[in-house]
Image (tube, rainbow, N blue to C red; front, side, top):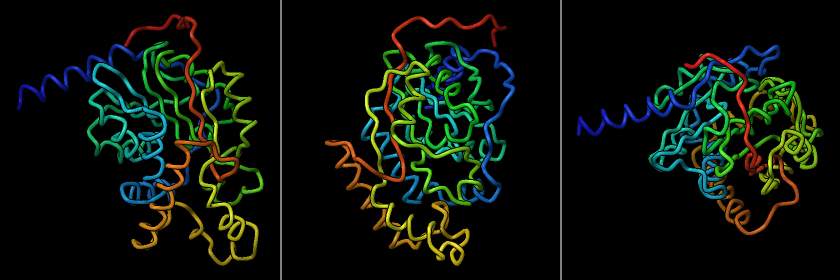
Length: 285
C-alpha cells in the first residue's frame, strides 16, 4: 500500500514537472472575488447545489474526467471540489488559482496546486488533456487572451469545458462582489472562443429555471431586502438544497439530449486547434 502511494506521488510530480513551464508576468490580472465570497465557497462547496450542478456537468456532459497517464487542469479551482471530481478517473488533476486563500482551501483535496494568472498559464503547449474553467473567464479584462492560453496548453485530442454567467440584464451587486467584468450572451462567448482559435463543439445555456427568481431578486425592490442573501453562495436549507439539486439534475439530463435556448449560465465545450503551437523560449522548471 505504501509503495503504491509513493509510486502515485512520483507519477503526479513527474507529470506536473513535464507540463510546467516558467510563467510570464501579465500586465493585467484576474479580478478576484471578495473575501466574503471566497470564505462562503470554502464553507459550502462540498454540499451546495450550485457547485454540485457544475461537477455533474463536468462528469455527465463533457466526458472530462482525467484518465491514467492524462493531465487535467481546473482553472480557478476555488476550494477544490471540481478538481477532486476531475481526478476521479485516476489521472493527474492540477488546480490553478491566483488567490492564496482559495489555494489554501483547495489543499484539502491533496492534489497538485499552482498559483498563477490565467492570462499567462505556466504550462507547455499542447500538454493538458482536460481543462475546466467554471466562472473564470468573466473575471478578466481580456477574455480572448485567457481563451488563447487555454487553446495553447490544451492537447487537440482533449476537451475544454468553460462556463460563464449569462445576460447583461442580470448584472447586480453580486457580480461586483464576485469580481466580474461582464456577463455573456451565447453569441458573445462564441465570438470570443473563435477569436481565440478554439474549435467549439457545443455551446448551450443552462440554469434556465433560475431566470424567474433572478428577475425577482435582481430587478425588483426585493433585492434591497435580501441583500447578500441573494447570492448563490449563501447557506441554503438542506431540504431546499436537495430540491434544487434534483431540479439541476433534471436539467442536466435534458442537456444530454438538447441544447437549452436560455438560462442564467452558458456552457461551452471545445477543443484546441489541430495545429502545432510553439512556446516562446522560457527557462524550464
